[in-house]
Length: 67
Image (cartoon, rainbow, N blue to C red; front, side, top):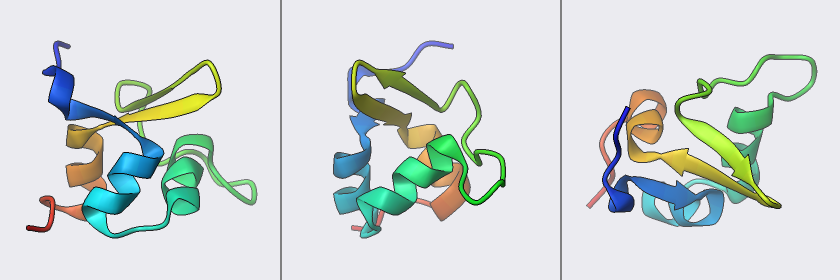
């Protein structure tokens, strides 16, 4: 799948753009308390020590980005 450069962001940027906590976004990538991740492998990945998520994944879980 091809993504526009602006459609991929860090969990920190996603948290600010959707008014969520960064920890919550990271937990969607990793899973928490024995639950599986909610993002698919096409919607998030770890690069070095930084989790990256797609706009598509955020919109699937949280709806359109708030204005």
